[in-house]
Length: 312
Image 1 (tube, one colour):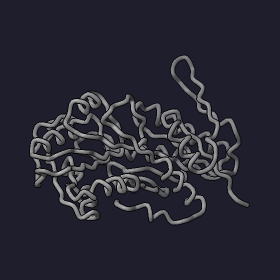
Image 2 (image 1 turned 30 degrees about the vertical axis):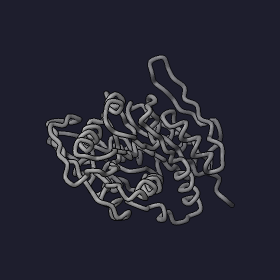
Image 3 (image 1 turned 180 degrees about the vertical axis):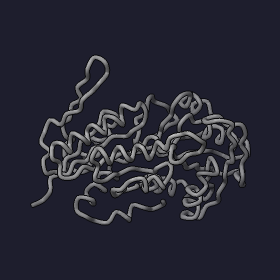
């Protein structure tokens, strides 16, 4: 007897959930969220999930209600006798809190992992974790996908001109940028930044030759866009012809949109793990729905997914 699959989505990822379900070949499951006057809410599956594999699509960016909604949907599926519950978290919030970087702070990513497992998750699917080691916080299988699957063909087209240099916006992203550079046989530049406090850059320099080149920056997320826009402006000052950036997660908080509009960056390409808060002429969105839909098919049929790891 074949196992029936149902895909649901939380309110934060409704559009992406519909696209993933469509890519898989089914309709998005019906779930409603009732709200009380004080802001309390209660998700409810409006169709049976008994004995079925339930995939719940929800990114967990702020507000924390998005995480709480996911946890409650997992709990509801467990109590409704779902066979397996797979949390599909395209953007895993709190991933920047993967260690104690100073005394008396929480390890938020580990706490989130504990809550998901306590709620009843049997498996996790996510994309471009800010820290790879977060996979080890879970005692259930984790399918860690990479946006390189959708970004690589696009960067490969750009590299055909023979004038492209890969760049990392900071030293932390050097490994990712170097992986692309090696795969495509391109040069590499690194922007070195120093921070006095979170989201505030005090100094930045460029390591590498970018004069007369079309620079492609790769990163896992773009939050306030301070690092990205400063790096882009600096690269142009150093003689680069153009600067394009590929960032998986469009967090884009605070002055991000204004900074991008006013910067010298040519284009910012992001995925739809997080829906854009507003439109911007310099931002282009590439969907990861087909990738997640295909991975779900392979998981259901117990097939290998390693071919999708072009660059990891």
